[in-house]
Every structure is written in structure tokens, then in C-alpha cells.
Length: 183
Image 1 (cartoon, helix red, strand yellow):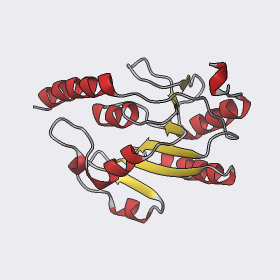
Image 2 (cartoon, rainbow, N blue to C red):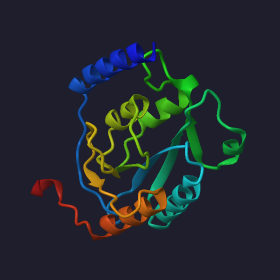
Image 3 (spheres, rainbow, N blue to C red):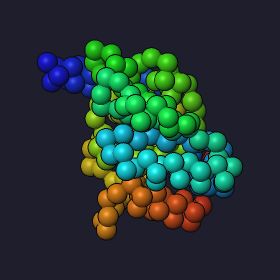
Image 4 (cartoon, rainbow, N blue to C red):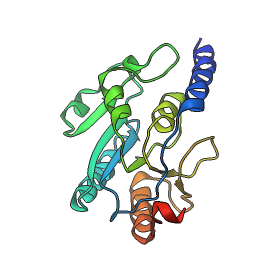
């Protein structure tokens, strides 16, 4: 049954994307004012790196929000105490795997300068979030999966989240955005 849900979900997403448009604009830590962090809670060890990255963004004057995807029906008890983190669970998915509910609505309502995706894979549930986000600059680790990222970082040495954070900091610190009139 999950196969049928995914097939229908992909068709629904593809249809939504036909009418979806976003403004693309390259940002770095100097030009961005807001960011959304997306991560998968499957690896609890990632929490410290993601939390530290959120603090880094705050120091740079970038308002950020973090959304975690929980591949269970309930948020695990230890995650309930994670301050300033919002979670989408299996209970928040509709029948074709699109995230719904209060947290998903808050995610889709945001129009951040950057979306930074720390997930290692991109299941359909997360494809909805990433592809329907109006974020101006979308960043992730490299994937061959169909996506609309504007910057992908190929992790050849290590594939852990802490290393991805280092690489994002490095590349965004040397990136020089063009003004919209230069594109």
C-alpha cells in the first residue's frame, strides 16, 4: 500500500510544482536575513551540530527556524525538550504523504532567504517540504535524486552532519552573491 501512496504522492507533487514559482537569489551569511533548517531526526547525534549551526546563524544576525522530520507517529520524549525546534511526524502526513497540520503550515508559510537541508536522503515527505518551499536559496548535500537545490555540496571525505556544517560555512563565507540586476 505504501507504494501506491508514494506513486500518487509523486503525481500530486509534480502537479503542484507546475504552478509553483519561487524567486531564486544567491545568499551568503552577509546577505541572508532568514533561514530554515531541515533535518531528519533518525540520527540523534546530528542534533548538536544542527543546534550549533543555528547558534552560528543567530550570531550572524540571521533569524532561523529548525524543522525535524520524525519517522514515527509521535515525537520521542527526549526531543520534546529541544528548544526552538519544530517537528513533523508520520501523524502529520496525509494519505499521499504530504506534510499537513500546524507545523507543516508554519513551514510552508515562511519565505526564508535560505533553506538548508541536512537530510541524508529525500523521501517523498521531505520532497514536499523542500520543493514547495519558497526559499530563495536552497542548500543541501549532493544528491543525484531529482531536486531543485541551488547549491549542493559533495561530501567526499566524510558524510556526517558536522562535516556538512563545516562545508556550508566554508562555501557560504566565500560565496559572492550577484544582485538581481546582474542575473
